[in-house]
Image 1 (tube, rainbow, N blue to C red):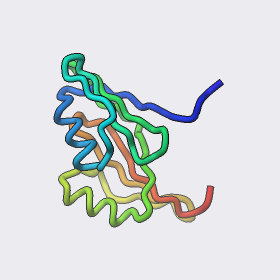
Image 2 (cartoon, rainbow, N blue to C red):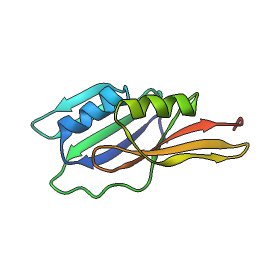
Image 3 (cartoon, rainbow, N blue to C red):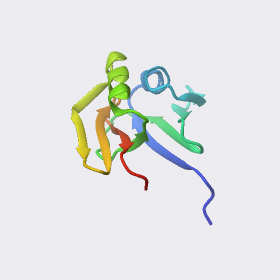
Length: 120
């Protein structure tokens, strides 16, 4: 029934600002952009995983997190902080399982980095 892939969709106030954040700061690739309709999509580094955005007059930040896996949490957090990404709190460690770090996009949507400490 399902085909491989996943698309996460967010409402945002400023498509251009959001697009710059996801492409320039997070390093994702622009896949589709239609300024007139207020819709854009980026391709993440995860195969068949896309993030779409729709312009909206009012945005309520999502508190559920889209999670991106990284090889080295400390290096990833340091790089993103240097690029101006805002993190909420410190790196959390669940022993023998995972490291997690929460950050936000320009509209306050919650995102996370994850470094697996064990094979799943």
